[in-house]
Image (tube, rainbow, N blue to C red; front, side):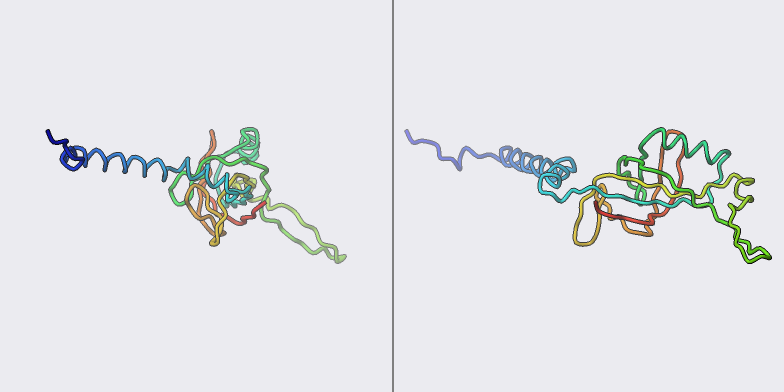
Length: 171
């Protein structure tokens, strides 16, 4: 009796199963969680501080919104309509415009524009901190390049506002 060779034992179903197994292995190796872990292990993942300016946001109580956001401690960020995870909220700076008046004696008086308070307009800078991948072309959060001027959306439990990245620094 002759022994069957390996080639005779290999059927088309075995070929399809092999291809499916290779595709599954490729999916595991290219998964975002694994690439995130690899980036962290190789040192490509670094702490990043991002400043997002929001301007002319109508809200009933701007100070209450700021206090609620700070109490929450983090905010979700959406970059170019792609969710990029949650970042720690380090602080919120007031960017309301100032009025400057020169007095007859030559002194200068600076005051916050009362029209913005009367109209309940929010102008603020959200300081966010998180981990990003640093590449030759800049900082990447959740697979999306983040540069100054990039439109983003910040979302918390009581707000969803559009803003623009005004600063990116690698810690």
